[in-house]
Every structure is written in structure tokens, then in C-alpha cells.
Length: 458
Image 1: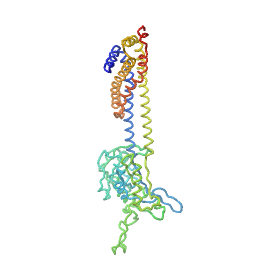
Image 2: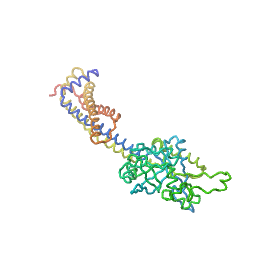
Image 3: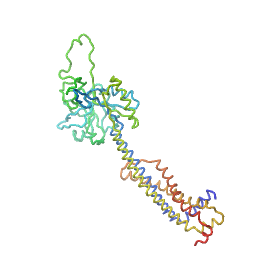
Image 4: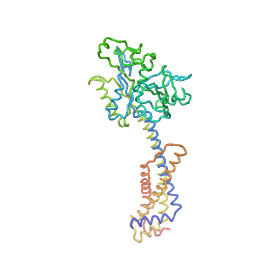
């Protein structure tokens, strides 16, 4: 028999028992639909979690200044001010694995608006690229401050949702002025909500301003002390300088006293404008390690560190946290897939059962076909084709039902759903494979019947 004739014979046999064939297909439909729906829901959830991880800084690196020590006492990370905004720009320009950088000058102090006050978790002086580094591109209101504001040290700020709620009582803050350390800042924008990060910190409890403004007008510290004294170790985020300390390192007059060196036109010492840390965004998760190597090499060259000298900075990443969350997501997806595959196996067992019943009912027909010249492989092929056709039809309807279920879940429950082409192709192939695997034994049993005994079967 040719393949076409075998297929026609199998279809005629299935049409003779339409109800039984439909009930048999139903098991495969449910199994395939479960696989498709679970895979699409799992993939959508994985994508949503991956985006959440990225928004929390999964691809971010934190470059911290070095550690000071005196008399055998180590003062901890950041006790030596070794990083500058120029370092941040150099990292972005010269490190291929880096997408963007943002220098950060921190402060921790009270913010006042009208009769209300609040102490934000984060007061960051930074640049316009901070939003790109943190994947925080959307503002619900207003605009981000500009590069010109950073260069001029403008007193402008962008606030988070928690600041709007606690300080401005939910009203629009754009255009209003708040005071940070007795310095007035005009609010020019409001960040979109982010919620808590992986460590439980409220990411919306934040104020962003030009780093030059925060550095010179709020934190009021600069440079590093070679003596390693407590004044150099103290964090710039907890100091409270006077309003007149506009320039870093000044404690009194706004302008320095005239010296003989100035009168003779001699060279003036350069002002060392350090930052507390540099936030770096790698181009992707795979580029984190190359980015660390490139940043390390670049900063050692810029800071003129010899081969035997230790780094005067440290680099931290969130790879471990991101990998932990990703592995948890993958495990949940695999669990959903395993549950769906169980229903597919049950459908396959149902097909085997129905095909065994069909062989028993059609024993006389099989004996007659073999008596007139049908070979054992023709009988085997006929029953295999019947089982495969049942599974293939079940796979098509299961695909439609699975897609519909996934879309219904998205509309009704608001769960993230993402179409999986791989799952669709795999479900069709698996449905055919189930027909072959679970249909082989009944087909083999039919092909091994003795023609004489089959003809005598009642």
C-alpha cells in the first residue's frame, strides 16, 4: 500500500467511530493546550521578572573609592576619595562593554517644603545619564535636568513618588521650591514609580540633582586627607557645612585670600572634585565580567598605579542576586511545564487504550486484509497512521485552545503572557511523537495476528 492509500484507510476507520475518536483526541487537546498555556504564562512571567531585575540594576556595577588606613587601623571603603566625574566619563568613552555611567555625590539630610519636612533615603547628585544607567527613562511629570544644569551647578531637582506623597502630600511638585540644607531647589520633574529593590529599599524615596550642586552646596567635602584623620574618614553625606561653604574644602570666606603666588601669576593648585561613587551600566549581563576588567585596567592607568600597588577603588556587581532570581524563575517555569506534560502523557495512554480496543474490534478485518495479501508492515503502518493522525488533530486544536487560554488569562487576571514559537513547534512535534510511541504497541499487536485465527475470531 502506498502512503496515500494507508492514510485514506486510516481516516475511513476513524470516521466510522466519530464519537470515540473525538473523545480520544480530547485527551491530547487538553495535554497540548496545557503545555502551550503554561509555557506562554511561564515565559511571560520570566520576562516580567527579568525586566524587574534589570530595573533594580542587574546589569549595574558600582565603582567605590578606596580604603584609608593609619597606624594599622583601616577606615573602610570610601575613606579615601579617589574617584572623579572625569573617571566616569573616561569609563564610558574607553570601555566597550560599558553602555553608560553616572557619577554620584551622596547626601543625607532633611528636606523642607512649607511646613512639612522629610529625610529621603537617597539624595543623589548625578548627571542626566543616571536614568539610562538605572533603566528609569520615564518621568510621570516634567523633565530631567540638563547637562547645562550640571555644568553650572543649577539648583534644580527631580523627585521620586515617595517624596511627592510625603513632602508634597500628593500634589504636583513641578515648579515648586523645596529646601535642602537651607539651599532652595526647584523641582523640574517627577520620576515614575519603581517600588522596593531586591534589598527592600524604597527606590521611590529619592531626590536627584546635578552632582556639582550637591557636591559644592550640600555635602561640602572634597579631596582626601593624606593623614587619614577622622575628618577625611567621615562620610560627606552626614556633614552639615554652613551656607557659605560653596566650594569644597572651604570653611569660611566664599573667596580665598589673595596670596603672593597669585600676585606673581604662579600656577594655582587644581581643585580635586571627587565623587562618592560611580554607577556603571554594562551593555548586557554577559558583558559584566569584561566591563569589570576594562574598568579596572582603565582606572589603574588613570590613577597611575604601578604593577605591585593595590587598587585604590573597588567594583561591586549584582550578579549573584540576579542569578538567584533567574534560577528561581527557571525552576518555576520547569515546574509548570512538568505539570502540563503529565496531562499530555495521560492523553497518550488514552490513545493507546483506544487503539487496543480498536485492534480487538477489527481483528476479523485485519485477518481478511492479511489473507488477501497485506503484509505485516502494512497493518503496522495503518494503525500507526491512525494514532498519529489522532494526535496531530489533537495538537492543532490543543494549540488553538492553549493560545486562547493564555490570552484569556492575560485579559482576565492581568498576568504577563508571551507567545512562545518554540513551544508551538514543539507541541506539534510532541503530539506526533506521542501518536507514534503510544500507538506502536497496538499497531505491532495487530501486525502479529495470525490470519487464520483472525478470520475465525468472533
